[in-house]
Amino acid sequence: GAVVSQHPSWVICKSGTSVKIECRSLDFQATTMFWYRQFPKQSLMLMATSNEGSKATYEQGVEKDKFLINHASLTLSTLTVTSAHPEDSSFYICSAAFRDSVNSPLHFGNGTRLTVT
Amino acid sequence: AQSVSQHNHHVILSEAASLELGCNYSYGGTVNLFWYVQYPGQHLQLLLKYFSGDPLVKGIKGFEAEFIKSKFSFNLRKPSVQWSDTAEYFCAVNAPQAGTALIFGKGTTLSVSS
Image 1 (cartoon, rainbow over the protein chains, first blue to last red):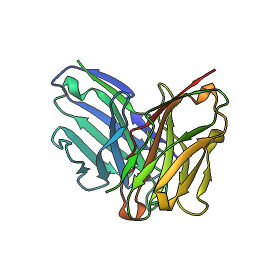
Image 2: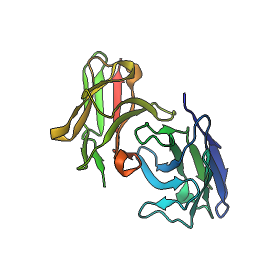
Image 3: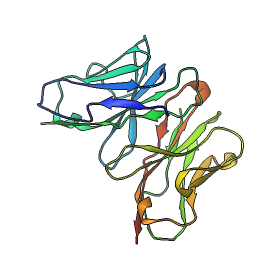
């Protein structure tokens, strides 16, 4: 079945540094990938929608200069948390939909636990 | 834009009890509806989905959900829960023709005692 791979699964970084999270669709082409953030005991909040070859669309309240998203190919999207601060500590999850299949259920990566010290 | 409301924040049941978790959405157009489960320490897993057709959808692990269009609801049910069903349950909706992302409800924590 379709698999979305997310790397790393967890990362600890110092305040002020940047962290890159990769999201890959392993056996299908994903025109669109979505990035979510989940705080402890809360739901997933959509951060941005990433379309291959174009700029990401950010949800209201999400700083695009802080959370840089690049979707350079149909199988890879990256989220870079720049100048991370402790309040950026969270669980980040990507998801991807099959290309040309708006009805396909989104497949989720395993998530990345980011801890900023 | 769509929104999703899950009525129950925390549900506590004994094994073999029946389960129903409420989910309502707001959107005037065509929607796809999903229920996801997140077991402690694990990632999201799809329980079931509704795109079209029979409004009663059967999923994995004995779960089912019924889409009632007039009520904008998609409640999750299971006739007899097990201790292993203890998890967080999320209802989600997207609007396929609008090409939108999944929007999640706030989730319901289910605790099943043996």
